[in-house]
Length: 255
Image (tube, rainbow, N blue to C red):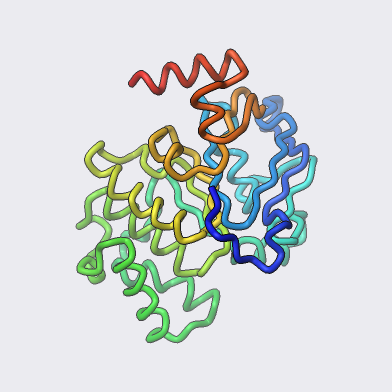
């Protein structure tokens, strides 16, 4: 899917992962994951529980530390250097299954907190951007409410707005609709579709295959810490090569 890639060096990947390995004690969670993501590309990762999807996405902004291999984000290699980790996190927004909003802060305060403290924006500037983002995700009237007063779908849209407030180059989504009631899933996916169409580089873990078919440039099927198969939505949905992929897709597409 070509979304008029306008980056001055659009031929260079914005994320490079080479042979990424991760253990939790004796458990080998990631067994040599390699992936390159281009600017403005939308990648969807899917697979069974425990396949390493969330662990992998969390290594990209160093919420999990990889033990070997290489991860380079926007030209910065993730090492033990705290300055590099901070620089990568400034460019990488993340949205989780659980909304992780501060319960004691209003929606507006949740969104303006990081830009004011990390990017040193003035309150007026931060609030202007926050209102623009709340308009974008369709809930400007919720600005002064607290998270507990919102539906799950509204809370997740606030979480997306909060991540976007830092003006990241990359957005990571870890099963952003899995904790939502079915009728709330569409409102969150609609925001993510708009974000993809605007040219945001995205890695999304999801089993929402309609979303994947609509906006993904490439899909990666994970199982047991490995990339079993990857390709365009057309290729993976219509002619998957691996038996494991065929079985899993048959299972989730039949629901």
